[in-house]
Length: 134
Image (cartoon, rainbow, N blue to C red; front, side, top):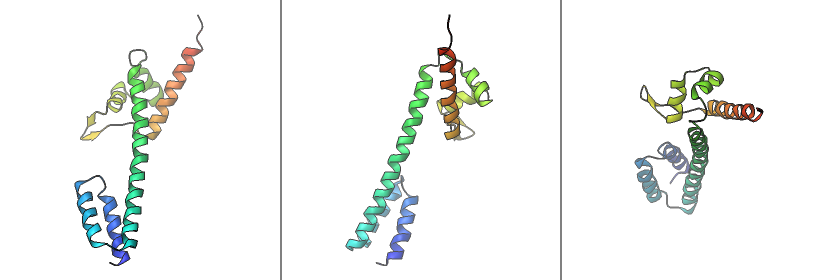
């Protein structure tokens, strides 16, 4: 088969990653592109996709660890204080993101900047508590 058509199909395959169509498309491609060069190109592309998934999973796990840690101290600190002081938002806004609530058909999550702000808030609160002496 022509190498350009294989490259186009690989681009389409990337768009289907994570869907049932991905497996069907990959099976079909492996039947069409049978030369060693084509098989090597397909394998290399699929391995790159899998590596990308691994990186994304690490990011999601890091986010989940932060959120679980925050939930674990929810009885000790005021989410209202964190929301208003560090985010200039309401406690409801903060809780929606912390709990992954669906609002207007979209799952609410902290974005990267918000996660950084949350980490800063927790460190700042920790320093303030640590500096108290009675």
